[in-house]
Length: 104
Image 1: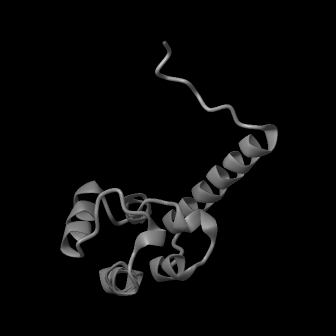
Image 2: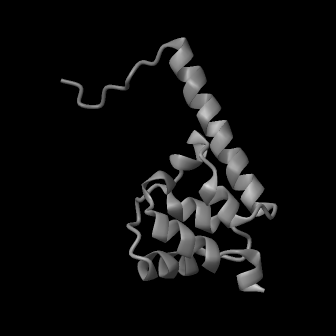
C-alpha cells in the first residue's frame, strides 16, 4: 500500500501553480529591490496573500532570520501565518516597523 501518492494535476492546474509560484518570486524580488513593505501588505494580489509572513519579512535586505523571528513574536504572529491571515492591526504595525524610513 503506497502512502505517498502524489496528486495528479491537469495541464491547466500545473500551469496555474507555476504562474502563482512565479508571481510569488516576483513579489519577493521586488521587496529585495526596495519596494515599500507597507505597499506589499496593502496589495490585494493573490500571490502576496498566500506567502508566509516570515518569507516576506526575510525578503527585506536589512532583516535576517533572527530579527524576523523577534518581530513575529513581538506582534504575536504564528510561524506559519500567511500574509492573507494577518489582522488589520498586525499589518499596520508591521508596515510602520519595517518601512525603510523607520529602519534608517
